[in-house]
Each structure stands twice: as structure tokens, then as C-alpha cells.
Amino acid sequence: LLACFLIVLLLVKRLRLISKKLTLILLSAIVVVAIELALLGSITVLNEEQQSRASWKLRSWKLTVEAAQADHLLQAASREFVQSGNMRAYHRYWDELRSGHADQILEKQYAMGLTDDEHHLLE
Image (tube, rainbow, N blue to C red):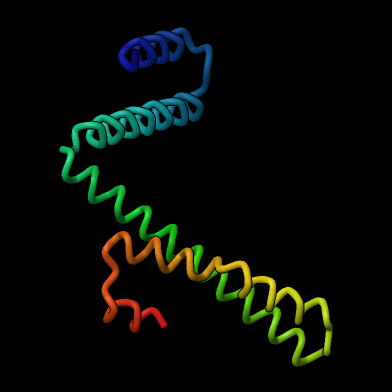
């Protein structure tokens, strides 16, 4: 497929239907597509252990981001209540705590193999 694009591009260039600048831009795009296809091919060749490790890292990263977002929500709500006395912020804070969302995240992290020492580093 890429060879066909290159042949068509060279023919069009020879017939002077496009400028040299456009030819270089299209050639660059073809090279980028070729590199992306090569990378995609190398990703699919990963063995099961590498795929499992990559999947674990992705799940771990998502849980870390989710925990940081929950923490930010609690901090923002408490800060808003302290600074302005806004009762909606007060209720948001306690609603988040009562939801058990932070505990669910922690349980998922422990299920993935988080140790107590690692948990203390996150706090």
C-alpha cells in the first residue's frame, strides 16, 4: 500500500501536477504512516508477559490518577468551605467521604499488589 502511494506520488511529481514543496510534505506524511505501522506491528508482537505488565502499569496509572482526582475534590471542597463558608462545599466534602470512593480505589490498589509500605509512600 505504501509502495503504491510512493509510485503515485512520484508519477504525479514527474508529470509536474504538484509542486516540490507539496511532494516533500506528502512524502513526509507517507514516512510517518510507515513508522506508525511499524510501531503498531511491534506492539502486537509483544509476548504475553510484556502485555500483562503493560496492562498492569496502565491500570495502576489509572487508579493513581483516580485517587489524585478524588483527593483534589476533597481538598477543593474543604478549602472552599474554610475560605467562604459555602455549605454546598461542606456537603460535597462529606458526600465524597461517605461515598467510599477513596476506599474503593485503595481496595483496587491492594488487589493489584500494593504493599503497606507503598501505601504509606502515597499518603
